[in-house]
Amino acid sequence: MARPASPTAPTRAVPQQNQNSASNPPPSSSSLKAPQSSGPTALLAPLPVAGTSMRNSPKWIFVSPSPQQSPSHYRLNSAGHGIPKPRHVALPEEDKALNSAIQVGEDAYFITANGLGVADGVGGWSSSKHAHSHGAQRSNSSLFSRRLMHFCAQELQSTTGEPDPVKIMQNAYSTAVALSMSEGIVGSSTALLACLSKNGTELRVAHVGDCCLYLIREREIVYRSEEMQHRFNYPLQLGPLSPTTPLQHAHSITLPIQEHDVIILSTDGMSDNLWDEDVIEHLSRLAGPSPSTPSSSAGHLANAGGSSITPSTLRTALLPTTLSHSLCSRARIISENGAYSGPSSNSALTETPFSRRAKQEGIAFEGGKPDDISVVVAVVSKTR
Image (cartoon, rainbow, N blue to C red; front, side):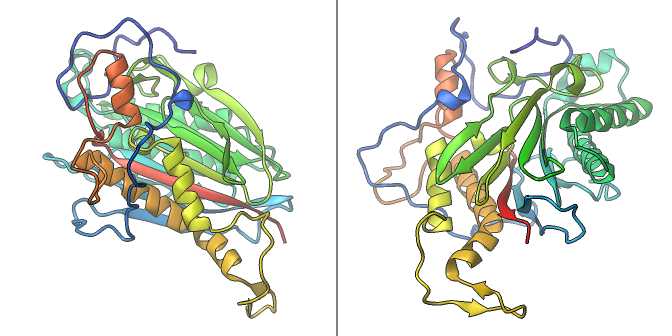
């Protein structure tokens, strides 16, 4: 449930001219459905994305399960990918010492053997009058989001008992805020953290803001997180000048998991530009037949350990990498061009989740929303 709006935290920028807001609140993100199209299915983005410059180069990481992980029912096979949005002004230089997290523009994410997280730095602090009124020397939301994810990763890796994602996020938040205050830096970030329970049968989640979590089973979405917002385009956010804290405000969620479940964490650069149906379409295309579908014995190979490798098991092993890349690529095309490419598109602007909500708020907005895009994907597998 949204708390009263903070007087000091900025809203996200809407990249087109605003009109008077409507009085009706936006619907929950999970209730938004893609518009029906009478034309053919839109073409999916090829891999890799052509024409990506070094300045906006994708950033990705792959982490396989650790053999030293405590015995459990399940483990995570995870990978992440990110594409920063084009900017006229360069962001501050990255802090290379924060090597437990990957920075993607003002986004950040991390992956460990038993957990993953994403954070979305909130822009607008550099022009915020509140930053200067509090004596801040400079603003840097990209640094705050990366610190938050770096310290979340470190806290999670140092946890020996049952992991508590809210406590982990709170400790990371406290460290990041203390550093920001000592350096006279302002900035804020949304955050989403997910980790395996010690016995590996549950996914435990802490959520603040408008990042997105999917739990997908048999090509069906069995859970999708709700956005936590003060109002449209104004998410709850963590930072030195925000009253929001993980301990007081984070949604704490526990989800039972099964083998072959797919877990997706993303910043709103993906969820503002892609519909839930788009996510399932990409997953179905890349994963092939459902794990419950009987497979042919043809085409089996053997690895060095003598176990069988099939096209299906190979697709599953590569799915975190291919799916995170594919979702980022499609979201980037929509965010920058505002339209699906293809001979039947007629260059028409595509209705996106963000544009639909904006219109419902009385804001003139069409097509995709330019933003940093970060996606982390994990596939649940049995511990062998």
